[in-house]
Amino acid sequence: MIYLDHLTTTPPLPEVIDAMQPWLGERFGTAGALYQLGLDARDAMDEARSRLAKLVNAADTEEIIFTSGGTEAVNLAVKGAALANRRFGKHIITTPIEHPAALGSITWLEGQGFECTQLPVDGQGMVDPAALGQALRDDTALVCLHHASHDLGTVQPIAALAKLTRQKGVPLFVDATLSGGWLPLDVQQLGADLVALAPHRFHGPKGVGVLYRQRRTQIEPLVHGGVQENDLRAGTENIAAIVGAGVAADRAAVNLDHRMDRVGALQRKLLDGIREGMDEIHLNGPEPGEHRLPHHLSLSTANVEGEGQALAMDLRGVAIHAGAACTTKSMQVPPALAAIGLDADLARGTTLWGIGEGTTEAEITGAIKIFADVTTKLRAMSPVEDLLA
Image (cartoon, rainbow, N blue to C red; front, side):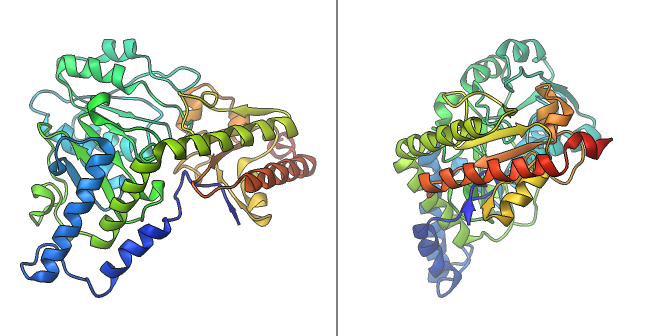
């Protein structure tokens, strides 16, 4: 299997699995216990928290909160910050191209009386800081933006946007569940107050999420019934997954430059090869470079369905993602593609490609050939125009 869906999830590194193993067996204690098994679990959590804090350059390890996954981390940040700040106002600013976890949280808040302004994005999916400046109001309680788009790969100018939120004293939440472990993520330089991470997307385990919370930023807990995570997230901690997340964070911090250079070179090889072997291919989002995630491609192919391409690729031993992140089962044009003005027929032919740390040049070469072959056959068999007639 040639696995090129590292945007959805990544295989845990061998050292991550090795580090987790004891906590799934003989070291089964919970961190809340006072006997040795519990103390060992607490020490392991502290070590993992320190590693995550180092990855994002947090000022204090207590600014790291563990959750059950990236989705919960996003929910805790968006709902928690908005509810904690509702005495100052009920206005939220976001974009139409956020991950469903963020947009779903905001929709829930709108049901609680909050108001949302969605900033427009340009044809590359980029937010204009001037638009944010105009949208900020005295009653703005939260600004919710992603670091890098799940659907487009676009990297936002977070530092420039954060300057505006800081001037107004408005908390800024940054969804880095896709960029964490693949791009530098210094919360001090970014100026973000809240940042969510998903370790399973940078070769860590599933079942754990991370929320950075700047120590002065107020959030209300969403899960009650315990005192874990400084009273901000109740529930018995998943020690094995937390330990694995710490190892994955440590590996990412040490090898980030090498990882970025390596997957970036493969990204360019993949894009160039597909463009050379096929016509009517559209790249969604920026060209490879500083404004795009180094391991991400979003491609729309004319006269073919992306789902058909993905299924045909799977039969040939290549895994890619059809459609847009977390919206594959919907027949509507994904919001991110609609926001950049992509034609509806072209949007139906969208596939997402994610390169991983273990991806090889031979796999990229093989995937290019197979993609060209299956697309040619699908176009010959059932053009989109005939299917829709």
